[in-house]
Structures are given as structure tokens and as C-alpha cells.
Image (cartoon, rainbow, N blue to C red; front, side):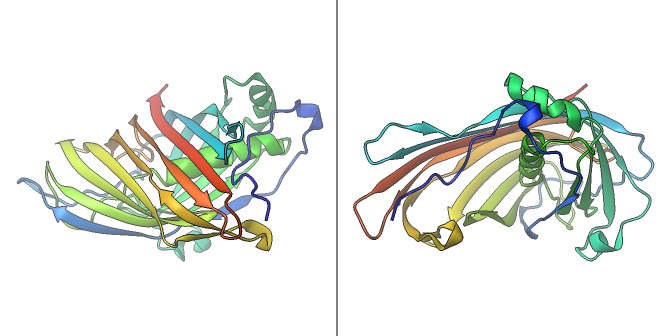
Length: 298
């Protein structure tokens, strides 16, 4: 069996060579389970979002993703995606569509995408046609996101659409869900969720409530991921790889205003090393990955 890269780099060919797309993309989000480890100090209260009366929030979402792979003693290959900054205008709709309500969502967050940029000039050129694209997050009052919908602008190009999808997907799996129980400063809770990225990963996010001032919360984040199975079933029935070792951890801090649809600041950085072996040969695939997400006012 020939080993192939598990990730691909972002295509940054000139816009004229890209294909326009007008289809809405709906991305299912795996459910979360929240468990309180320590309720924290008094006074305590249930922390829930109430964004119905909030004007539009303007925020920049910046994401990075790096992937380095090496097969045996061959040259390392870089499958990283360029850094991407997406300006967003966010508001909460009065009603939740039926398809979102069926996922348990009680809030519908509407997003309008501004002029996204990247240090990669080719990607920035491709992104220009995506300005005005929209997205919708289905969310609960606790902050759990249950579905993601993206509607590209009519002239949006496949390269730009894929980059924006990756950015939003990263934001979804770095979001914070608050527990239903009352908590105070110093509270600690875990959020368990599966991440489906070729390999099914069990992700645990440990959240610590560092500060709380009215509706403004500062939370520290610690992330770990572990594979659910010791075997990676490759796409298109092309074989399997054994997962010889897998490490992935992350940390960061987010500033959250419970009256705003999206975080108002902060960043999270994560990464790790993995090694896979071919059960039918001595071939070894080594991979080093990393990603980051940053929220910044504009």
C-alpha cells in the first residue's frame, strides 16, 4: 500500500482558474457533554447567553493551520494552510429555523463575511469574490454550537470557500459551552466532544473561569485529543494505518461577553506529533500539526 498525505495544502492558483460556487454548505457539529469539576467560589450563577437585544457585533477571526509530514527518511512535506483573517458582522435572529431547532439550538447567529485577507497573495486574490458571503451558527443558550451553515456569495471561488470553511470549523471546535449549573470565579468544567477529521478523535476541553464581571467572562482553555481507535481507516477504502503514537494538546484564553454572539477577544493555540505505521510493511508516516485561532475587535 502506498501512503498518501492525510491533509492537503490550500490551492492558491489565480482566481480565473477557480470554479464559482453558489451552494449552501451545512456542516453537522458533534454534540458536547459538559461536566462541572469544581463550581468555584460564591457568588455563583448560571452563565447563559442573552443576545436577542444586541446590535451587530464586528469582530475579526484569524486562524492558522500547519501540517508537516515525513514518510520514512524521505524529505519532509509541508501541507500547511495559509493564515486567514475573516472580518465578521454577527447578529442573533429572532427565530431559529426548524432544521437548527431539531439539533437542540435555541439561538441562530447570523454572520456576514467582510473582505477576508491572507499573507498568501494568491489566496487574498481568490477571497475577494467571497465578500458578502453569509453563515449561520445554530447555538444553545449555554454556548454549544450544534450546526454550521455557510452560503457563499454567487461569485465565490472554491479555493476561498474551502479556506473559509476551515476557518469556521476551527472556530466551532474551539468554542466554549457553559454548564447548566451555577458557577463562580475559579470554577472548572470539562466539555467532551468528538472531532471527525479522517480519524475520530475524542476531544476534552477543560475550562477555568478566571474572572467574571457582570456579563463579561474570562476563561482559560486547555485542550487534549486522543484517537478513539488505534487504527486509521484511510479514505476510499485505500487501506489502514496503525496509530503508533498520538499527542495533541492546546491552551489559551478567551474573553466572552454573554450579550455578544461571538467571543470578544482571546486566542487558543494547539498542536502535537503523530506517528502511523503501515501494517503490511515497515513504512512509517510521521506528522507534526498545529493550529491557532484568534478573536480581535475591529
